Amino acid sequence: MLGLNSAVTLGLFAALSAASIIFFVLFWQKLFRKGILNFIFRLLLLMLCQILIVSTVGISINRSNGFYSSWADLMGKTIDYSSVAIASNVTTTLDAAILDSGQKSLDGQVIIREIVKGENSGISNVVYMVLPKSVVSRIKSGKPIDLKTTKVVEFLAGYPSQPEIWFRSLNIAKALAAAEKANPGMSIIGVIPAVNIAGKQDLECMNFPNGGPQTETWLSTDLHSFVDHRLGISPIRWGLMGVSTGGWCSAMLSVKHEDLFYGAVSIAGYYRPALSKKTDPLVKAQLEKDYSFPELEAGMTGRMDMLLITSVGDIYSFHET
Image (tube, rainbow, N blue to C red; front, side, top):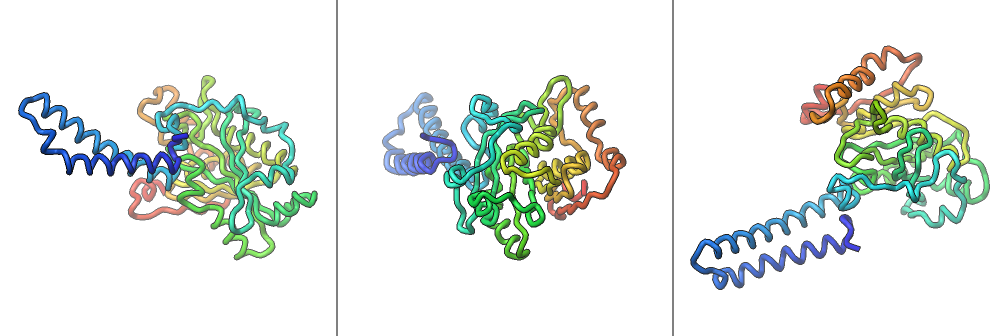
């Protein structure tokens, strides 16, 4: 299969790019003829060569960073996962067989990829779980997860990134393992959901009115329900961490759902909805009102710890922070 992130796809485009360059070096003069049609023909060949080279570079960058997960995703099409999704509130708990089918890291972690349907949002999409070695051992031995020594952190990608960016570019599994080594006796379960669930439409992790996508619900109550059922644990508050748009999402979700989250880290984030100019003006006005960060903060009943990370080089994030 020539998937967007397949090594075969990258190799094919790289080979075609190299072949086109060699072809032009060897046969360019032989292709020359007088006349406008020959000029157009050679121009099209040059354009084809450039397209192949740019495509090769683009595929390589995407493989490294996980911006798009498939050709359909690249084209802005929403993938329908509903036929293969498991319901967030009725799924069975993980067992040894499921863990054995997951991807293993060098640090003994197991990475599980699931397709989940949110009970309340109706959204069906991808969710990754990074389970530390200690949690894997307890599940395999039939012991309950010790919530006194285990934290859950939800990681949110930016736009137009996919959850895979946390593995390919940000190396989250290694970072979690390092954090555990630095804090003996503490385990961290990473939960990494799809944030961009509507193709080219940037939803900013919000619940759109008038029957629109309910991303906020998907990333909060639905995801908590899924993890609680899948791991067989009692409800606890999680941490949040996000990059860029994910930074906004982390900060916003933490203050809107104090009962579900205990803190948030925003990396290069911002603190108001960055909606597309194509968004309906009435919908935009409603969302900006509903998700006004100062008003959300004013409505809080308790304390929320936040770490906001920005840089002078990122003008927008620096100004927002």
